[in-house]
Image 1 (tube, helix red, strand yellow):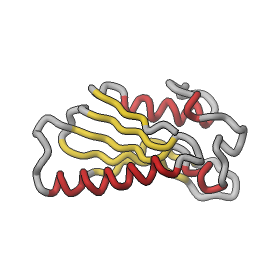
Image 2 (cartoon, one colour):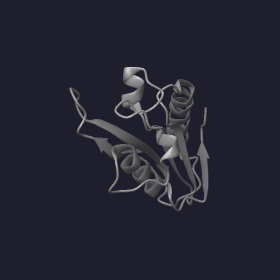
Image 3 (tube, rainbow, N blue to C red):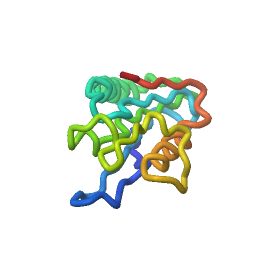
Image 4 (tube, one colour):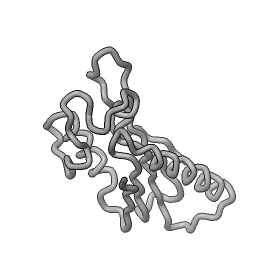
Amino acid sequence: MEKKTIFTFSALPYRQKIHVDGYYFGSQDKSLAIVGSTRGDEYQQIFVCGLLIQALRKLEAAGDFAPDAGIVVIPSASQFSMNVGKRFWPMDNTDINRMFPGYDQGETTQRLANSIFEEVRGYANGIQLAS
């Protein structure tokens, strides 16, 4: 497993930086991308991603991945919203889920959506754990 930061929120008032991380398993081949929570009230998606990461870690350690299989799991796109108990982005009440495919020069939620979109682009299969 490799943990990689996909996006960093750095200009948050009264907060340390918050990282959106992806967990990579298997080979570099882009077989499956899984995205969990994109809203601040989607707790079960993060729980499912956590269980999935644990299971994939065990499979990878046992050598049970096909040599041409690569999986990425992105558990949460909106930890900031979760931390403050808001469904949408706390700064302007935007829905990150509606920002895709995003814009790399736009507002924070557009840049976040763009970063995730670019990271999962090219995968043969994708799953979003929607609410």
